[in-house]
Length: 527
Ligand code: XMP
Image: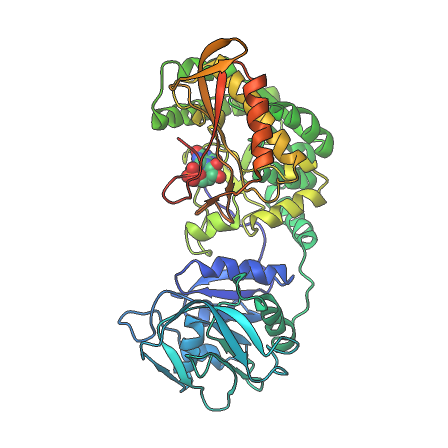
């Protein structure tokens, strides 16, 4: 599969990634300030960074010490190009050492929440913020002398130089992590850098993205045709809606109903999504086929493989039918994918070509499909995708929907997948979702898998009789990106309501349990 990057990047703020998880968060925070940002690896030559005409550069934190052998370095040319630069944590120390300041490995460590003493509350970065503010620290080395021409603006009990500025050269730095929530004025300081230090305006919106992408997609596709696999998830739905807006009936969406969807999802795609977008949709009812292929299989990996394989077969068949139905029409050369920016960054540092993850929504399409990719969301974070979806008029239930795995309920039944078990789990899941929504918890919870322990039976008592039913597990988690997660401390009364309703309303379930495991060690899904 060849990949295509439809839109030329607008002049961006570059976030130089020094190897920890901070760069993505910084890039998101910059965009929250309505300035477009992109991540580049620290191994990119400075000349290449500058050739991108960045409006400003942010140097992220990283796990290394500037004095460690092999620690990432940066050509000092970056500070002499007239581009505003903001160094954070490791980036701050690199800036300090590159420009002649002193960073010592004194053993003066600070980790976690630390009080920052701001000596210049009228400085470019700190104006309007308190003289004493909590910040998030994570460092071993400490800056003891700022480079010449810099003003020291803050310190901590341990670090004499915790922030500095050089307005004439537009160079700024802080020892801490302004991007994390625990630095309570962090966003304000970042915005001061962007607006006051670098003179940028908060004018980037997801609306710009839509316009830009529509133009780029039209230029890319021309008269030809495209197809898109809809999974019912947010990413493929928004990608499809955007491409539909650009090329209308040249796009056909394929929705494979594998019978592993949650209650109401197929109808949502068939009715609400089509009504909102006017998209041409081909629904393939493949429930029997999937059930047959899954019969007798309990091993999770085996299930995933079967579901992936069947999905591809059905999709290819649908593609052949689309061509056969209008053989004289322009060829179907493009495949729309809802790849997001974190996928792009994780699979190649943010600058490389697309790399389809096996975890992808549609279950991982094969590499040898002969398509060019249209990936209109490959510059966006999940919350931005939701904004684009809302702007395109997609229904709230689709735009705000929780992430749902490609193999669907197939990997939420511990044991063999059968029609009866799927129906049972669908009911339990629908009740949990309904009550979470009613309690207003949708935005607090990243996702809440509901799992059927089909291979387990437990004793219960219902009415006058003894029962021997299955447990249902609730797995509510809070997360920013699904890489790590914690179990959500949900109100007991909501849990109680879900439990009562499930045991009353769902046949063969006599027990509801709560999963109180973080990730790691537990994954979000049970299989
Ligand atoms: P885990 O269970 O690995 O899940 O903690 C992380 C996130 O990925 C989702 N997930 C999948 N998504 N195909 C998908 O499209 C899959 O095979 C798959 N497995 C897990 C999961 O729901 C969570 O959001």
